[in-house]
Length: 77
Image (cartoon, rainbow, N blue to C red):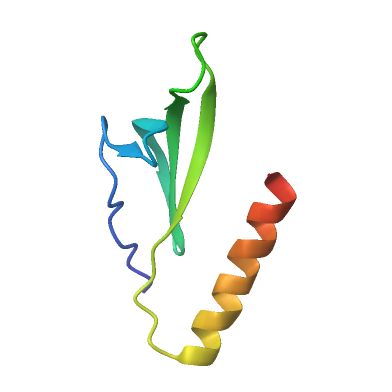
């Protein structure tokens, strides 16, 4: 059975002095997705932030997962 690791960011956390976490949208087998507010805009601009969470120790598997995560980030950027 696959146990999901808990999300590590909390409501109110601010990333890079720019993105304020508003809520956890979902948690899955490889990470968590959060709804955040971009503080660089005076109007409300919401963004999605994805965090990779894994306890996999196999280096090759980790590299593969990171590659997939990075490819997805580049597509969505």
